[in-house]
Length: 275
Image 1 (spheres, rainbow, N blue to C red):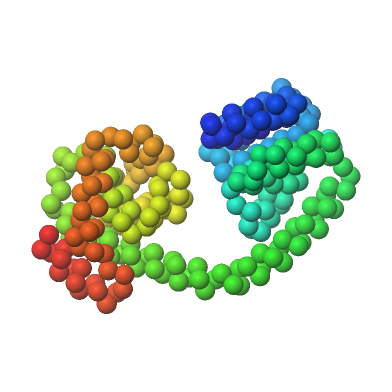
Image 2: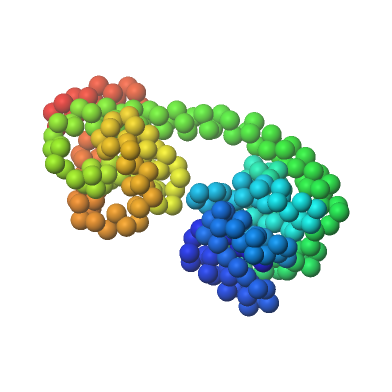
C-alpha cells in the first residue's frame, strides 16, 4: 500500500501499524511524492491519503491518481481529523472510497483498511459512491441552514475584535523601534491575539488565519514573511526574541483589555493614545 501523511510521527506510526498487520508499506510526506511512487508501484493494493498536506493535498492527489489509474483503480481511503458531511463529501467527489478518522481506535482503523484490502476495486464502486454523495449533500444542506446564522455571528465577532486590536497596534506602533527583530514583533502579535483567541498557531488554522489578517491590517510584521513565520512556528516559539515579544503582548492585553463591543471603541482609542 501507499500512505501519504505530512506529519512525520503519524506517518511512521501508521506505517509500522500496517506493516504489523501484514502490509508492505511505502510512504510519502505529501501528495506529489505519493504520485511519484505510482511510477514504481503501478497497481498498489490500497492508497491512504491525508486530507491536509503541503504542496498537494489529499483531495487533489486523489483526483489525479484516479485519472492516472484508468481502468484498474484501487481503493483510496482518506485520513481526516474531521468527519463532517462536507469533508467526507469532498473526499468522495474526488474519487475516494472511504475515510478514516484519526481519533478512532487504531484497531478500528486497521480493521477498516483490511476490509478494503480484501474488497479491492469493484464494478459497483462508482454507483455506491454516487449514492453516498447524494445522501451527504442532503445532510450538508441541512447543516448549512442550521449553521449559517451562527457562522455569521462568529465572523462578525472576529472582525470586530481584529478591528479593535489593529486600531490599538497602529496607535502604539511608534513605541516600537525599526530595530526590533521580526521574531520580537511576531511574538508580540501572537501574545496579544492569543489573549483573546485561546489556540495554538501551529495547530489551529483559524488562529493562523486571524493572525495573518491582523498582519495585513497593520503591517506590524512584513506581510511577505508571515507565511514563513507560521510555517516555522514550532521552531520560532523557542527563540528568546519571540518569547520576549509574546510576554509583552500578553502584558499589554492584560493592561488594556481589548473591548468586545463597538461601543467601547472610544475607550480603546483613549488608552492607545496614552500608551
